[in-house]
Length: 444
Image (cartoon, rainbow, N blue to C red):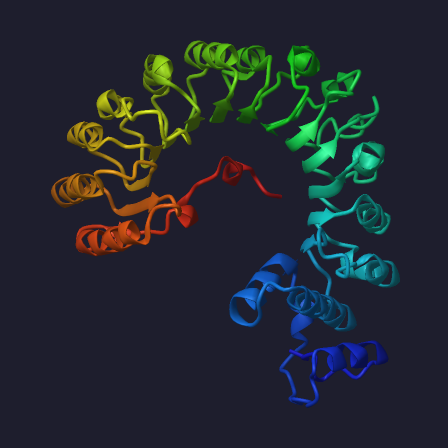
């Protein structure tokens, strides 16, 4: 690969001087490596440099940004053509790619997947250069995406998936009209719909297969009504994720229940939560991936019914981030797990007695991930865990995690006890082993 030390163009000489590169490491590459590189993720580049080279200082950020820009230029000079790009310029104002893209439009002319964490101005300049994007994830730092979102959507005729974060959302009545047979996935994270007067635009999304709302404002029955009104063809949403204070989800669950295969619910409104759980029991029976959070003891019977009613569950996550809530759900969980279940996450303040009862009735899990919010009884919990993996021999992969706020002594004890378990099961990193609901989306 031609390296930064080989390039002698004027624009590179300044970068090389700033990076204190004074030697040329000349060699003859077998072929033009940059031309074959199709993915560029500046976040991973930054992380790699910070972890191994420098500290998180102002000078450090400037150095990393310069490396990323130089790498970007290097790919352009060697006629690379990207398929996927991830660029984060939020809090890194010097990492601006607008001018580079404008001067070298072929670099992104065939790009298919884009993730941009940037300002609205940077985003606008980017999308004037390409219409080939199929998968788009935009995150703005000004909370004002509303002015350009409709235009942005209409400029991308091949768009399949759309994800947007931290923005006020306003859609014209024609924003989705051009995509009745293409747009299949939408994800809104920390978006504000409070000032939206009409949601009629959603009536065009007849091919929607995945819908996610994560901590959004202004989501209610009026929001979902255009989707509820779709009759021909039927709305066959297979993936649904709803997190936060959201109203009206019950009616949507009733409509898409026969098609739903992947479901994540983490609702904060008690009434909405109870109604949603009942709708899952009554209308959904094909769920393969189920993730439920923020429940209390009053929901345990509903959760049991959700699990027993869906006999094809392969991935199950049960979690509560509130350490004050007990793990009573474990007492009856092992008895009702379907034979199809292969993957289980328990994120609870675990009482070892409840865990032992669960283990007595649990027989067929390949991957078990445990996040324990209880700082007490660590020794007893691990004793039961060790006996389980040793005697049942069904668990092939295990991950165990405790909060970082626990004292170093607790972490040391955990490491020691983990070593005792390793002869009987393959230990995994907890977060690297998580299967997210978005992993089930089909990428084209």
